[in-house]
Image (cartoon, rainbow, N blue to C red; front, top):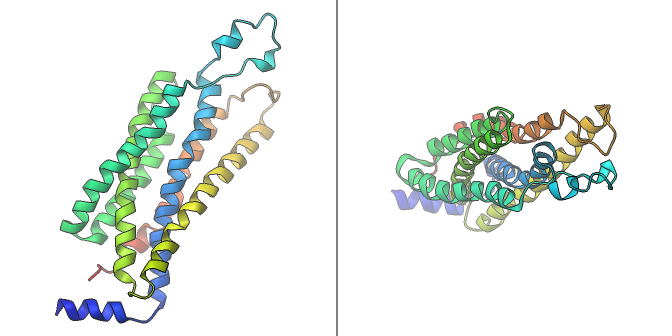
Length: 241
């Protein structure tokens, strides 16, 4: 009986639900890419807010004020970038196994919910002191990575199990192509948000606006929007055969 069902799916014609599955699974990878690739420019903002370039500040008596740039140490940048990737590796193992044991759809919704909550939590990183912000941001970025890690194998698996054998490769490629759009969206959102805050600030261009601490939080929290919009449709997807 199971072989007949699988054979029927392999021979099924392309239908509307195939394209719905591409969009639903693809939006997960869109969100994954947005969340992973928005952090490098955010570290630039954090550097301007929480770090002072002491090399330049020592020369402040002879250097113009606009050259006293703020930068985030390389070790801090590397840690906050890689900690989400570490969470991704953990999430792939954990959620991949849970998807086999508890069912694709249930675990799919769990990983998406974790991504939404973690994205919001990154924006609400506790307090405003440097160490506290970095530690809390790193913790929530790790949890976000775990959710992203769960989304990767489940999106690919669900799409492959819904597709017929003639279009399976093309449909999976279509799902993963959403990653490129997510990377592009992260850059566009960052530039737009920063431009809005820069224009609305009364400070000169050489200085960091006080509102910049709100800007990077908004950029991170916007990663929850596409994931939240597709949560209902993910839960309405039938379990794969």
